[in-house]
Image 1 (cartoon, one colour):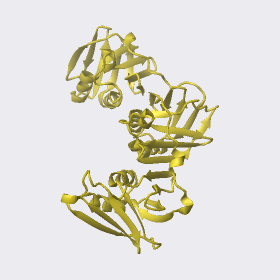
Image 2: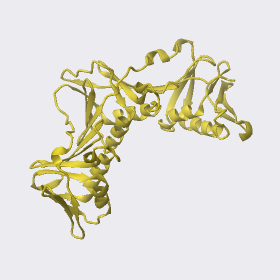
Image 3: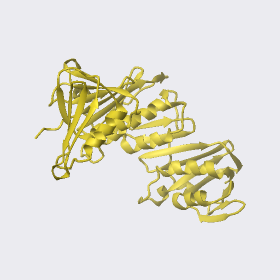
Length: 370
């Protein structure tokens, strides 16, 4: 196996795959990335057996096809520290030689045949959606998951596909984030017979993999795993076992709620200010709406008190709720500062619901006042 490649391009792909490869593993072969080279190009891949990634590398010169296993730590260090613009990578099955005009390296080589298979995207039945939307769905839901819960289903994002609509939901039992949007059905576009819960780590890897992609992505759902393919990258992930909570039942009756129009940036600033004096024992902030303003009050015992006011367009009856500012801030951080949203409140004991016009909703359970 021998190729000539652009060092910077290979480094970017290597760093992406490194996010999948485990730093420690009882199987030493998993601490590597595998490079498959054919006459048409090359594919770099990595896996921890739960999540896998394949990246196509078309912009290189193939001198001899074959496969090689590259150590993530030393291989990544060479690509990062070398100053050569072009590199030659060659392997005879026993040693790896990486050479440029100014540097030469030689590394031991493991058997590529022992590397686990990383599935590619196959089949004609799948779903298709815009990459920026799917990236936003992940960004707006993944932070609300809970990897420390004994309820394993909370350690991932639920994906539901209904007709030509996809719904992503993340929750930790104290708040819930839901994003809806359009999706195209290609072929039969079948979904899994089990609940499609994608692990939090896999969703975070997908978000990074789609960072620069503006094209459509393909999603294939199978019984125990999913495959997501963008222009050059395919991500494989095993699904979380377990039953996701009835998230629809979390939303209170909107007919009985008051609606308050707010803007993310100014409201986020006020929440951060009110959070300065809170403590772990007294972490709640009182949000009181009325008379064209919202007043935020927090009491941190020995840490002091805070009272912040922000003008609003709301002029209805006075209403208040006590919320954990951390959960409020998490919602506001995933919005643009100038994005408008609606806060729906019913009473002090009922969950607060924040929603935007682009299909995003966020539910926060209130805190007890005592």
